[in-house]
Length: 335
Ligand SMILES: N=C(N)NCCCC[C@H](N)C(=O)O
Ligand SMILES: O=C(O)CCC(=O)C(=O)O
Ligand SMILES: [Fe+2]
Image (cartoon, rainbow, N blue to C red; front, side, top):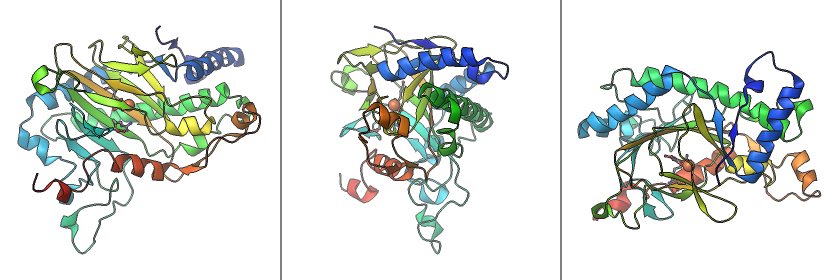
């Protein structure tokens, strides 16, 4: 089985007809319902190759001190426990360490929140610090900021397409209203190949999980056989990169909005092929304060049964992120 390839240009070009939008929305609806994962034909030109090359340069040529300078654990420098660099095996999924390194980014907050304003060296509240860029890698910050700007715009268009796909042609901003100031997130991830001595047998590059928010747009280098998607049949299928496409998937908040019609599909990464793999997922998310609840039309499909309780996206994110690393640094002491 392979995942469908969609073209949503009817929603990105200003001159498209209602019929072409309906046709695209109908293919989108089937893909989200049947798989929760699909390929989206879309390119941003040289920006993508630049971002992948800079990510690779960062992981493979930066010194350990460059990396630790932007650690998520440097409280005074902006690290808030979530934003920043994490080394191999620092991220955990389902209680097991993930064999990848990465830098995590989130939507900038207007006023970063210090834990204790009298003691800035104590750092920031979880998720409320500042983004950390490796200034030694020339062009890194500008390239990624430009890249994410484009993906935010793409995500906005996809929200309109998804509204159509859910029957909201007459109220096409039903999702966009709650994502326009989205608390987006992004990761820049490096995966060395899993080898036996690294725990290769049974080891994992990124354990099975669902994404937390709305819709994920993944750009990865051409390495095959790494990202796997749990199909409804229970089989794991490869979601290998296709040139000119993003791999797109549904997150937990979209499952909630759709009352379970579109599942937040589980996936994992097992990179055993040769070479260092780089991937850069962008997580297009609801507003931090958005209270997400099943949409009326999706509830109607279920015969009026609301299968989910409303949830504030920010609460869901904090819950998830709090479980992504070993608890407070104190807990690690003496290990
Ligand atoms: N923002 C997202 N989706 N990040 C996914 C990170 C990988 C899984 C994570 N350790 C977990 O256990 O959820
Ligand atoms: O690297 C990948 O292909 C996917 C990573 C992922 O699923 C995540 O970071 O949420
Ligand atoms: Fe993921």
